[in-house]
Image (cartoon, rainbow, N blue to C red; front, side, top):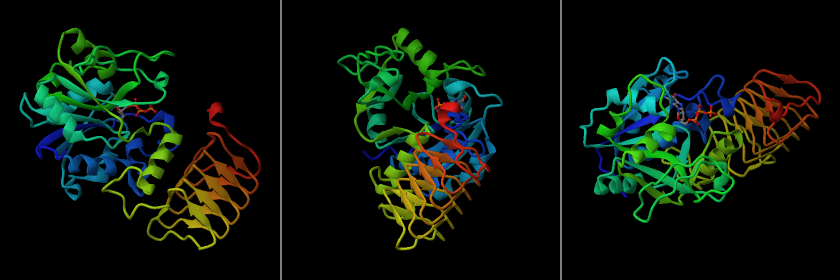
Length: 362
Ligand code: GTP
């Protein structure tokens, strides 16, 4: 559903992204290059397509990098503003703080987006449902196959959220909080200012307790939280392959997205939604699938890389194997090494022989 065209949003991007280290040591999670552009570019383009006009970024960790990347937003047809927390205020505190920069009147709907979610859901339909019902908050709920890994969000037959339940081995519903909310502006103003507040643990349960109308907007469209390395790689792969279409993808969807200056000879096997960064080199006979290869990285002849992130300027030498792993910027995986199953090599580390570090050690 096409949006209203005058919608304001708050984008939560202040988290430290600890689960994505070492990728997030120098770059905040929402700015990590994903399918050829900063992750957020996909979200901004989708939001714009649904009628969002102005977005306030709620920043904290490495705050200045967001304005450097997106400026005033005019290249996206958006107006962007930035609000920074000196110390992180949690999701609720961040929304309250960023709301100081909103221009919407008290009765207007305001969209809240988590900066690490890829979602194909119809934002316009979610906003419409909120406005039609006159709700306090309308949450996007997604249905997952294994809800035991998440807190779950049951609703009654009219779609009203009845509780926020913690993780349990036997969840009562497979619907979970998908991290995209519509708030009536005046409801944001009831969140205490200048305090650490969690919307999930405090604001939403408090509103339900007070009898306010908290609605669920449930669907089963594409949805992914890119908080872990495996999910981050999957998100990039899905965007490159076109599983989730993005107006920000810098090229047609397909097996490979090669950025300007990338070198891929015809006898290298590269596919499965791989992005090869600007100036990166994949040598003859190398095999790369479903991976994110950073700018200026080198994958030598005979190396194998699958479902992994290879950082900017990193090198995978001949005969090395990297599967389901993260190789930090400028790191080198020497010949004969094998990284797999969640291994993470820190930036600049040089692996001369078969020394392997697994994520379980981190
Ligand atoms: P991990 O450390 O790996 O859990 O990642 P994270 O720090 O991003 O936390 P999480 O995934 O729970 O955060 C959900 C969203 O809220 C992300 O978009 C974060 O950037 C954002 N976020 C979390 N805490 C804060 C905060 O205190 N302030 C602001 N502005 N944003 C936050």
